[in-house]
Length: 153
Image (tube, rainbow, N blue to C red; front, side, top):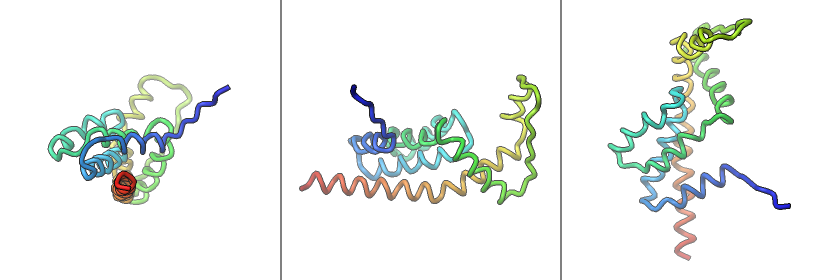
């Protein structure tokens, strides 16, 4: 029986390496995608990234690969860290208690009820995004320098 091996990191790197464009634009596009993935604009990050990509001419494919690095598997860990950092900086008292019964009003309040929670996630995400964005740029630069050196030899 054949086993299926799935390595999402290797898959993302292979897709990034296969992009046929100026490596600098790919590096900037991926780094900007990582920056956008740190924002709490769940579901519309890629839409918000498009005007910036259009103005800067950075690679859209690389950006989208970066944007979707925070997904349903990595999101809970990332947003917990962003909330922790943002809460330390902002100092809001965001106590949330889960109600006994779930209904549409509770779900609406979770998503739209507290500007403080959104601001906490935004500030925490932006603080975490600084090392992540810089690291993503230099990681891609390193990957492309290795790719070019192997192509030349």
